[in-house]
Length: 112
Length: 113
Image 1: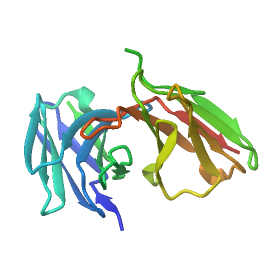
Image 2: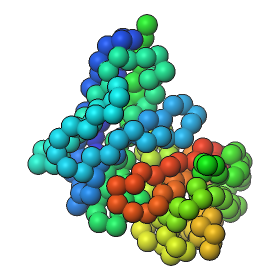
Image 3: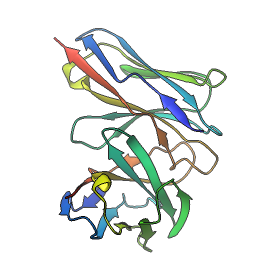
């Protein structure tokens, strides 16, 4: 079956660093995406990993280990506006980049 | 450039009715995917259209159907609505190629009463 797990909720302090983990078990793998979704808004793209390793993009970084079925999203220098849900999604097979399997999302609350 | 446009934004329907939702992708994008988002299930894939053809399909009953027009605009139809169909329906457009991200619309909030 297809399964993507991530913590339901996390809290962190403004200015700190937070790591949101995601584990997956899917039939096939063609990349992992992270999306950010503020309440009442559309998900917006944060990162894409298809090879093992760390991808850094400003304050956000994403890591992938395909052998472990594991990814994390690292948010540095947290700001209040980072309070949102973070969605981990896997593209399960070739040609299926637009058939994404999503985790339930991690709701992050950033406190002053 | 203009983003993904979904209409209507909000909709209230009665059980047993049918509904049609519309999605206009970003200009130049040929792939449109539809997702259902509920608090309990998260985002679940419904189907994807690419160049007017359904390319991928999720595990939803046949009451959920869609189509794509030659201008890449897509519609999703749900027949014989059930209370459990109440959800946010999101459409995502992309170029349909490898490692290109999907851009989501604001969604249509459907409430079935």
